[in-house]
Length: 272
Ligand code: HEM
Image (cartoon, rainbow, N blue to C red; front, top):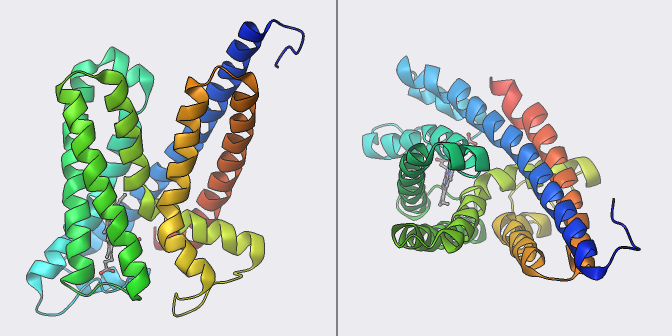
């Protein structure tokens, strides 16, 4: 609760606590959603992969997935897909302050693994889009490609600042990387939350409706804009900016929770 009669400095301090609490709330919902995504991927793809029934990968409704006589492409697809577990579990663990503070060696090793696997997934994903033809529309392909290219840039900068022990700057670039490597996850949440709220307005079966085009880029640019706003509000001395941003964080938390609920109940749990 913010005390409106308190002196400005204390009011800003209280507002800062509200901001941090709403940020944490969003993160907790994101952790649940990312772990559910990882669980779905392992449950849906690992048994088929280990038993050799690779053609069954496509039962989840993929763009391309399994292709006869394309061993390299199939291996690229399944390594990309199964590594989701490393990205979702590793990424969320990296951002948990208690893990960072109490186990710095673990943080360093998970961090190196996360950033390296993230780069591998971005490069592999871009190759699948343009080298293998795994795209439903050109614009959708470009949306995901730009997502991957931006992730490669933030991964390099996060590595750079970690090596130079510029911890605050490293932390911010690692958080940008987390958002960008969650682009594919946000896409699924975005579709589901929007479908629940509007009944599918602007979506088309051929994925070229206004909402489809928006989500191709908005899936990562919108969360990135919210993160930048959060950084700006954290640095600001204005209690008003902090409180307004806390409101945005609450709205983001509600949208993420709705998206996780929709994705789990309609997209992921039927394949688990
Ligand atoms: C940022 C760069 C990325 C690009 C360009 C990219 C691209 C792609 C493409 C083209 C496919 C479709 C393959 C097909 O249907 O044949 C795909 C599938 C998939 N990707 Fe990525 N990806 C990227 C990052 C990620 C990340 C970071 C994750 C995990 C958090 C991920 C998880 C998945 C999963 C699980 C599938 C299988 C589809 C499903 O079951 O939902 N991707 N990706």
